[in-house]
Picture 1: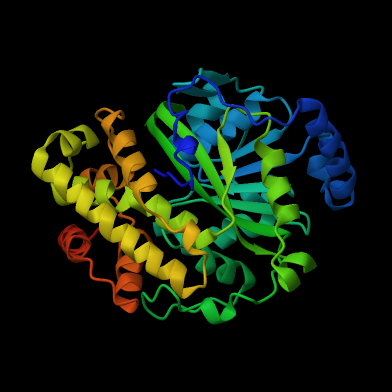
Picture 2: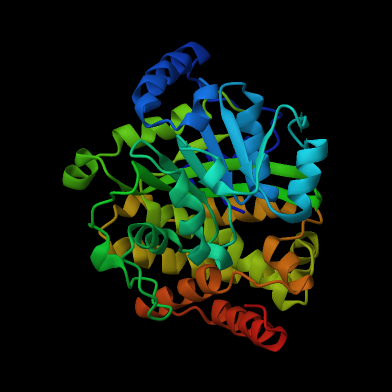
Length: 401
């Protein structure tokens, strides 16, 4: 789950039934026409059957299916879902059913593009990666067959995965422990495999309830931030105008509330203001829902303490990178995270679901890297450290790697 903003107004639409960007469909259609011309030469023979931009969804679970369905709903895109196992067979045979707080979407077997082999999906205009961070090292083999020079990647994933993902795609990643800044020296390296890589921070309550069935119960705001770009303006001047506009063009016609965060570091720490306390406490308490955390006075107090520690670590990180103090995290994020949680109901966070099902948990990128970064910056985070200690103990005891 995610919330990020420099103004509380970003949060006030949580319960609205549909949120649209102000750009008109006419303007978007004009941009899409130019997009078609740009990518025509790169399209494979498999792609010649469509005149729509191709969106490939890698990690078609609760999050990937929801955002992919909203893109499909516009009628503007050829959305192709990569699935496996029973989820693949059920969706291929019966279609994909997404029940949603903002209106249900059903994609029939004839309408939906379902694949179990990325080699058959063709070159994509956008690749939306919604994998768990536990599968990060497997991501390049799933993503690379979909890439052309025009392709943009949006990684809607938890934790500090961004530089590692870029390095993996570029073939310069070497695993050397849990340091969250091990690749910073390479961060100015050229991106050659595609046009751009974005981080996606999703504030969304969504669960896969059965093969071929996803339930979206609340929220859905998506924030994009640039990780790397092949454009000369980005490499030379850190100008993000082209990348920002491309992100807005993708989501403008959807019901997804979407914003663009100019600072990736701020976006990631803002998201962790929800993930660290609520995913963390939920697991440390043996697997409890969010409503139990916010309604218990002791756990509510603990959640506030972890939020405050996360804000302190995030601001120290921003300061170390020369960020404008006016962009620092503060009471807006603190209040928004608790307000969101108060109105969420008995939601089951993703890490809690993994723990209860005894699946690998997102510990390294979601919890450990944040804690290590705080320590590196000499920020004291005792409550966060205790949560991480407990979660890592569960991980060892139950072998949830």
